[in-house]
Amino acid sequence: MCNLRCVFCQNFDISWQGDGEEMTAVEIAGLMLDLQERGCHNINFVTPEHVVPQVLEATYQAIGMGLRLPIVYNTSAFDSLHSIELLDGVVDIYMPDFKFWDAATAKRLVMAEDYPKRARRAIRAMYDQVGDLVFDESGLALRGLLVRHLVMPNDVAGTSQIMHFLATEISKDTYVNLMDQYRPAGQVLNRRKQYAEIGRTTSGKEYSAAKAMAGQEGLYRMDGCWRPGQRFPLTEP
Image (cartoon, rainbow, N blue to C red; front, side):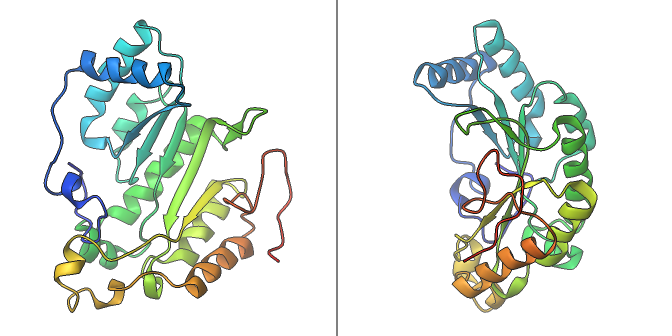
């Protein structure tokens, strides 16, 4: 399940309908070790705010059984500060979304008017723990903050404001993953008139504009625009 109700969720069957199976902490630890044996680079918990105690229990069990991989906390950023405090020293890489800047938009599209405020607080707390994203010599992420932002049609997400926040209140070295894969899904498919402003995919022009907004704020560590070891902003061709 999930602690948000995004009307456009592309994993609607999991987040709204609860598809999946219950497992004990020891069983989850076993899955983590199996992934390690298969050569995976990290253990990635997706949108786990509502099960943080279980994540901690399973991770404790897995470390005792030989887990050595980095732990990734992959989240919507609708996280309590208490949860982030509990994860201090456990999580190596925080990978939060920053979905919406405007409270009214968040209320309408993810059913959480306080989402922007909580996301800002959570991302600050995550950064305070792990700092900017760092890589090993082969380009694999080891520790730090990676912020994702889904570029939405008609700029409903408030991309410019979010990029400004990251550059001025977090760090100009923040690694940003700007995503262009938005498509209508979930309730939007069944209520296209109600959600007309997000009833289509994001255009290439809108995505290019989002990248320009990030660059104008001085953000330069973005997928496709930066590689480990490079310290200066790149100019788009």
